[in-house]
Length: 248
Image 1 (cartoon, rainbow, N blue to C red):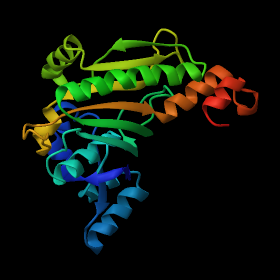
Image 2: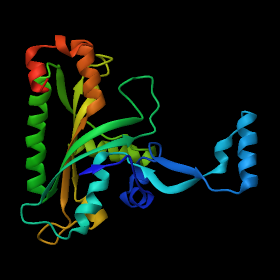
Image 3: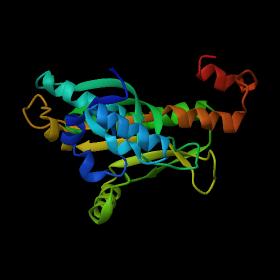
Image 4: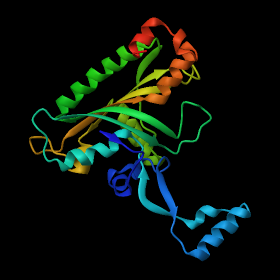
């Protein structure tokens, strides 16, 4: 499945993303006023004022992760087969996370492999992709380590959610030193959602119970920056093994 960077605002609302990450969410706004409103907008623009107050939210939100648009599609197809489902997902994503670190872009590309099914199926999938991810990054000639992690949940309740996520080992990240050795960059993540997304979207396993889901996410732009930082700006001069791994 390949998705554009925008999806329905209702999907963002129903996903529960705003409960946990309101500080990262992005909306598409547009002008929907009268001629008088337009003149007021232009006046504000000419005077260096806040012209954005003349914009209103549309029905389009910006996708925070490539997999978010996949779950309602799977759910509408009905209960999963006994083997569950695998989805290869790619999309441009947005997170309102301003930073001077070039690895922390607000608009970025994400490639994900998503698994839906029973708890045993999706946990086996996550372990498999953790190994595949490490093998792939090793082939790129990058030094890394795997560590348990948590998402940047918002507010006081978020601290408890982050602690619980770590305690239950629901999220692992593959960290590469790109701009800093003290603060390595998460270039891949491996996430187990239990049945949260299955319950949210009405995605059913073949048993009729809410499906469990997991995903393996590759940060394309971060991996590119890691390659440039490690091997230089001329791919022709990169090690033969790295070029072969990338099909160059």
